[in-house]
Structures are given as structure tokens and as C-alpha cells.
Amino acid sequence: VLYDPTLTLTLPVGMSVTSCMNAVAHAAEGLYAPDGNPIMSLMAESGVAAIASALPRLCANAQDMATFAQGRDAGMWNEAVEFDRALAQRAAPALAAIGLDLGGGADCRLLYFLVRSLRPRTVVETGVAAGYSSTAVLSGLRANGAGKLFSSDFPYFRLERPERFVGVLVDPELREGWTLFLDGDRRNLPQVQ
Image (cartoon, rainbow, N blue to C red):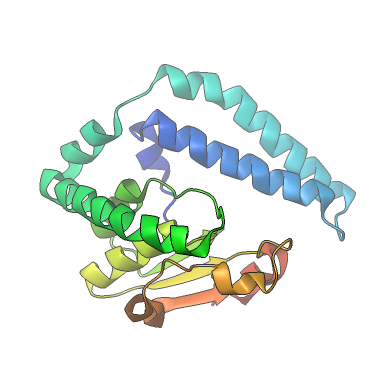
């Protein structure tokens, strides 16, 4: 997992807020889960309250993402920017051909940069959609020469055969280092090994 408490000291506010909103979404999932219980609900509510309390302090200590990344490794940040540009150019026509709104991507520059910089051997991702973040992580791992990505998703149930769209942007040559689970986080995450 990429979460490192020391990174939050200088992480750009937009990325931090995005991460917080993702955490709130996962807490909400815990509140309406069919097999939920009072303890899980209490934990979810406490998590949302903690995030709501921390966000004003987080925003008061903001830093620009490019400044953060260039301060760590300017050459690697430039590599990440180029990766992101190439992914955006490839993704637009691929997603237009599908004709579905699968949601936008994460900040792939930062994800790629962090994977390249921190060199994790194992990454766990929740939420794949079209596969922007998966592609960024897998490309970073490949550039590092090692690593494995475990992804958890729950396909868009409103579509026919929705699993065919999960990770549609992930190139075949990147899939060797990828394990994708499609039964929702509660079922998927215990399978990560």
C-alpha cells in the first residue's frame, strides 16, 4: 500500500482531499453493506467525522503537487508528466470508442511518480473503473523492474457484462503483474496475498 504518513506532510492538498473523499466513500459503503453491523457502522461514522475534522487543517497547509514532486526528484517528476500525457492521448480515443462514461482518472502523474520513487513490491488498489490508476501503478512497477498490483472493484451493475469494462485502459503487457478481483472490497480484499 502506498500510504506513508510522512508523505501527508507535503502531499498536495488536491490529492489529499481526493484521498479523503475516497475514504468517505468506502466508509459509506460500510454503512449500507448487507452484512453490516453496529461496530462497522460506528467505525465508518467515526472515520467520516475524523476526516471532516481534519480537512480544514489539511487545506490550511497546502502545497502545489509539482513543487512537492520536483523537490523529491525533478527528473522522475518529468518522467511522470510525460507518462501522464501519453496515457491521456491513448485513453481519450479508447474510451470514446466504448461510448460509456466510466469516470475520470486519478492524478496519474502522482501515482506513477510515487510508485517510481517509493519502489513498492506490492500495491493494493480499491476502485479500478477504466483503469487509469491501475495503468499508472503497473507502468511504474514495470519501470522499476518489480512489483505486483492487487486491485479490487465492483463493476457497474447497470451495464450488460460490466466486467469487460473494468480496467479497459490497462495494456495487455501490463496485466502480467496484475491481479484483479471483481466482487467488491469486502470479498476481494481478504483474497489479497
